[in-house]
Image 1 (cartoon, rainbow, N blue to C red):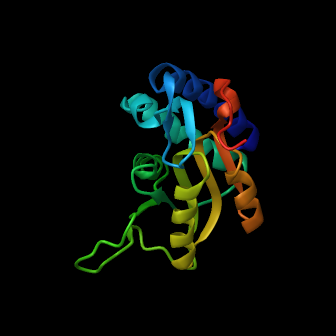
Image 2 (cartoon, rainbow, N blue to C red):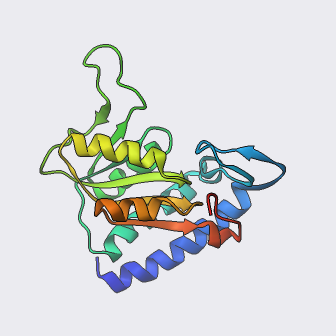
Length: 194
């Protein structure tokens, strides 16, 4: 895709994604709750609820594809840690024809005892690594380590929403491109861990 066309499409999709999450997935709570990262916040972002409609999930997947297109990055497989990445892996694979995979939180424990499901990743595989929401980046880094152990190359790590300040510098230290579609600034909320 032409990078300028990808940028225009990406801008439109980001605006739609932000509005959808703000209206269907954001809640300001009376009391702080503990996030999966261990941080605490009164601002809760539930991307799964926000994108439960097929049309909104499709728009989010198109935004992920446009983000890679804007950066002129080609990928062979898309995926990440299960639950945060599953719907995006399947959606992007459907849109692009690439393969999808998911990383289990633990090896299966029976049969082939696999940690990775779906596409067989190896040294020739270029990966778009996805996550729904990151705060510290622990989940996306778990997925990154599994992809790296399989010998594949992560060409871009991305999240729909980055509500913290740690993930981008951590991927920069690894020499891996990272970009979130939206950040805490898009929702006018305080970054967790700042």
